[in-house]
Length: 318
Ligand code: HMG
Ligand code: MG
Image 1 (spheres, rainbow, N blue to C red):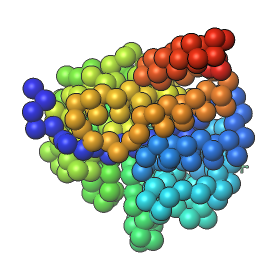
Image 2: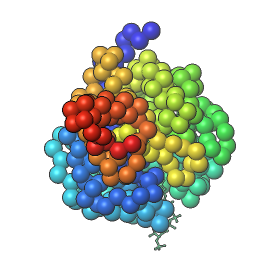
Image 3: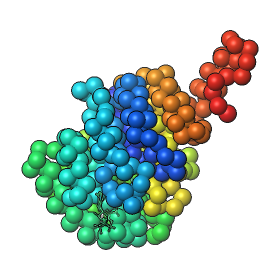
């Protein structure tokens, strides 16, 4: 067990998009920018910074263009944004993004609720978008949502997942991220789906995107690692959820992922202390505690140290 797993992984930080899209509290543009810059300072090289979806559907990210234009990131940090249609693609171009992320669902019900399109309509839109993006020289990721369990239709057949990923491969997308949107998958399911998808998708193009609603996200990452997957999505502090998937809680927390991987000798390039600093900032901006376990453990230690040094209550909010 755990022999031959990847020695290094790519982490795609989705907190500023998947996290903030689900927050009821308004986060001003300048604070989003600070947060993204703190994530980059922690060593994250792939950050999904916003989405260019309809502001009526996701008002939290209506300032995406301004966020992109205000960011000052090191040149080796890749910014992506979620794009649902040609209007969103044009905004991504205005924002100067060289990398975009498309998305669709495996089930008709989630597809309708999330983007107001059937699965086939979504595939047709993705076809147009990826063709345009490729001819403009852009790098294209595609999320496939509700890959294991759908909040409306229950367990999803692995064959349905593979049918769609085959089509995405035909479209020539550069990366496919399989989403456990409501955080319900278990490791055996991950193994079954990933093995089927790998029949036609190169392993270097496959990412896994786990939400941690039922506490199985890290176990699912291990299942993925054992299959050779080396791209994992996560979100600072475990922020997140899909507003159009009832019961979807936060993503796997980036700190928990980094802690586990580095502990196993798998390189992430992320500085955990600086990541915790970014987590503190996120808690301050959102005025609430975030669910990430490593963050909680670390902040309680920092708090005790502050208490013993100052002999007073710590600055960390409870
Ligand atoms: P629609 O209402 O069918 O769209 O929404 P429409 O084409 O009829 O347009 C309606 C209005 O929206 C028009 O404005 C358009 O201009 C505007 P109006 O004339 O009424 O004033 N509009 C836009 N405005 C700005 N940017 C755009 C845009 N498109 C249309 N790009 C649509 C269809 C796809 C736009 C909508 O359903 C939508 O935005 N959905 C996005 C929902 C979303 O963001 N969900 C969360 C992200 S997915 C996720 O979290 C899962 C993931 O994390 C992986 C996982 O966990 O599984 C990725
Ligand atoms: Mg998600």
